[in-house]
Image (cartoon, rainbow, N blue to C red; front, top):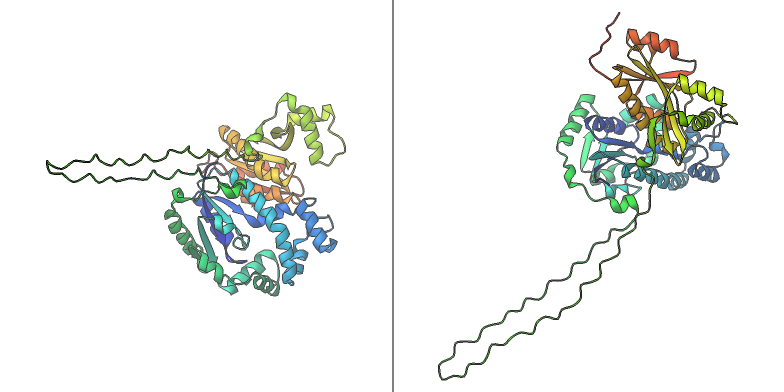
Length: 430
């Protein structure tokens, strides 16, 4: 496992933590949003979901069985004991998923954004703690505007979170996000340049849940100094020098047995690649899962889908656990049917699937990749699409030449997520 420099990013609701995290990502850091992970672990049917229902009842669920975060928030932010109960359920699950992601990181700097990072005890593993501050009025206005909640609800949530006074005393860096965006960026850039990733602490004990065993070092042998006898006159009998007894030689302490690290599912266990003819039956099963069909696709239907969509798949445990279909035309790559078997697999595999498609699209000189996601697509699919650099755009916000291709392929109920692959465009406006 590669060690990395971990920045813990804290700040109250609406302070601008996500803004600072994204700036650090643009500078080269790997970003992890604990709030997004909380969405993942609370997905319907997970152990965390069941624990929440057991603790708070079905009244916190929406009509489709998902956790209604607004109803749950109204419940816990008005009751300190209920908030502690929720945190005791969600924090361990988020911590476990965070460690799973950190084990696989390849970046030398990682930024972990979490409101309750200190309370969860994760700050002890951070190499630096960054706090983001913002005037209370600006926080309230920002949250009320972006989350469509009233100001009183925002004040209640901020009150439940408490002040940052204690955390500010622990912080190594304080970013003032109360001014212009460029002023915030200047602070972040300055602190980024001052980072020393090589000073990162060893995090293996935390990430692998094992104690590090240090090999004991035998104490050095005692140094015995023998004073030579004084020079004796000729008529004096000279006594032979006193020879100190050799130090007792003891066997070195036994070398401790190596610590066995439990196996962890890693990215290398997933084979991400294009489909082959031999994958047809497995693809028929996976597509049926995505479309909630009771039975796999027929051979004829699977063959038709196989031929019409350039499927890229992820194989794990001998089955297809994720896939996406794509095609390229007139320098535009379009992706649809994005699916993963679980939220956990989405986190591990979807970025790799999209990266594979992007590499192939670049080879075909494509200028943009457009992903069509249903409006009601699973949140973990949406979050990982966003984390891979895609942004929601309107059709008229695309290049004129791209619009005709996208217009032909978009279906009712889909949103356009786009990512530019090149800055110098081959096509020119009509």
